[in-house]
Amino acid sequence: MVSYRELVQNCLSHVKEIMPWDLVARLEENPDLLIVDVREPYEFDALHIKDSINVPRGILESACEWDYEDTVHELVKARNREVVVVCRSGHRSVLAVHTMQLLGYEEAISLRTGLRGWNDYEEPLWNSSGTEVDTAYADEYFTVKLREDQKTPKA
Image (cartoon, rainbow, N blue to C red; front, side, top):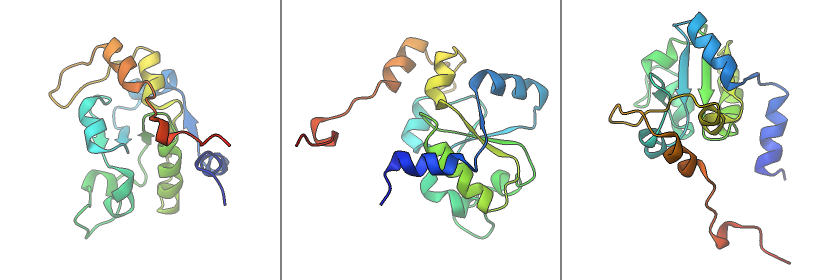
């Protein structure tokens, strides 16, 4: 059995990553770049990169294919397009890119550090109302808030 962190680490040997400042440069160089946010819809609604699309990991495989209720036409057509996959920390996006590579996405890469790193780099985030989110709000939003029952039990 492997842990979640080990699973992500194992996928990293097959997945390319990009840092937030490099994504800023890529967006300037390639306006056709597609940003896919694989977080849950409530997370996406709270804050996301402008013009990104939300495709939660739970429906990713069917969203990448025609003839499913979850099909996202822009994503299906992006197999040969530069795609950057984002999430909160850069872990879910690594798993998503690994899956997308298996499905034939040749230029899919993961945003290392996720949206937390994007925010730390002081790049803008937007909410579902189309309003830019305050950096302090984003800092608080990204702060890990584990309940006691979510922590590793003490021996």
